[in-house]
Length: 185
Image 1 (cartoon, rainbow, N blue to C red):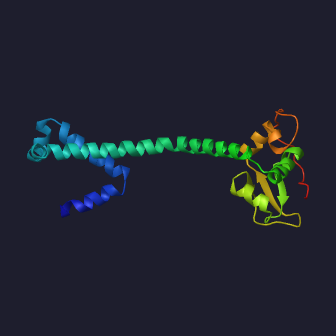
Image 2 (tube, one colour):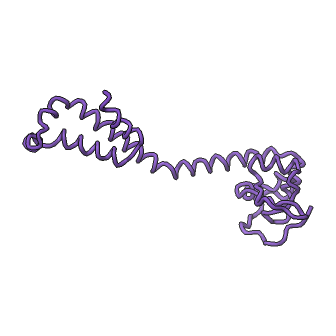
Image 3 (tube, rainbow, N blue to C red):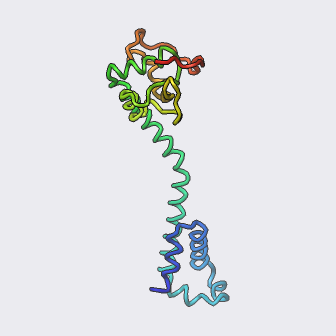
């Protein structure tokens, strides 16, 4: 068993090239005609170890299939995480406290995605924690630090302005608000 340890360590590293080589070697040993295998001098080895070679083939093929599914599934995982994040932000926007509504109302009324606030403002800290606001930079000025509203929150609150205490129900959203300097609080 100790002679197999280096080979097992090589397989555990997850190298796709090694898995492919093992898979190819097992395929050749199992499915080549007896004449070819006899010329290579491996006929006795193949006949005595068919079950082990078959297991190696299945294990390596399983590893290759698993790696392929992981590679192909990565974009779907990211898309799924984005859907979950948007759902959480929507649910959080439905449970806004009055002081949180006031902060977010200024984004919707002024039609801006970036505003300056004091970084220590407790309401802003809660909204950042919940992913509704994002602090843009680490450097502030006399007006405060820049905070940008999340894209999902921006779209949801523009479609449902009553969530932040604005009248009018649903109104058409303009994806690109006018750009201008943020108004200090």
